[in-house]
Length: 291
Image (cartoon, rainbow, N blue to C red; front, side, top):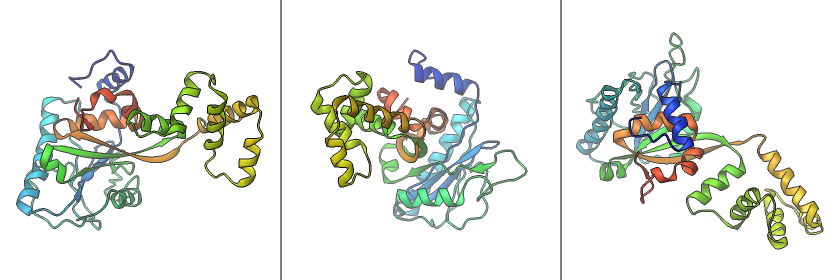
């Protein structure tokens, strides 16, 4: 990416990986219509439109996004155009990539929530799913990422990317803290890890009482009876267990249309959790990724 700064370790990783043209998987969804971005020889991305709008305005927005993707490819050959437009949940064929101008069509995704679009992507896309060309290596629609073009796209020329990644509870806490949405447990957990367990006894007690996801009365009683060293060991054991594996979690990242294709490469490559925590300075005051 021409605008990436290589001094930051995460930026350096992205810069190196993008220059190496690594295989990425990404999908984009439009907030009232389902549009899919397909990566040739790679898993592809989806894009959808969810909200009611006049066709003339909607048509203009769709084609501005498709033209922008084509322009990115013209300006930098490292980034191929992989958008494929999905018009309806029952659609069977897709253009790879979708090129502007798009013909008028009736969207099958009007007023669909992001959760509904997530469910569609998981169930219908991926290897051997909708749009998979068995004759081309990895030529399918990604089932772990998609983009949404919504009413806000018309206002500020941005797209919402939804990306699924396996993350543990510690990573989720870091993301919440980075975006000022963390609670006391998140703050204490972060401090505990950074300070090697050097915290006040009351904070240790609060933390160990709030780490278990499904506490019952017996668990509450046993935690209350723990000595300080035992409480720390319980926290350490919980951290070790969490870091052994994660759970699938969707993250939402809004980015400007002009760099949507390039940003999708980077976000997919390093993971949305890392982008949201390690690259916070790449977002403006409205939460839009603008590098």
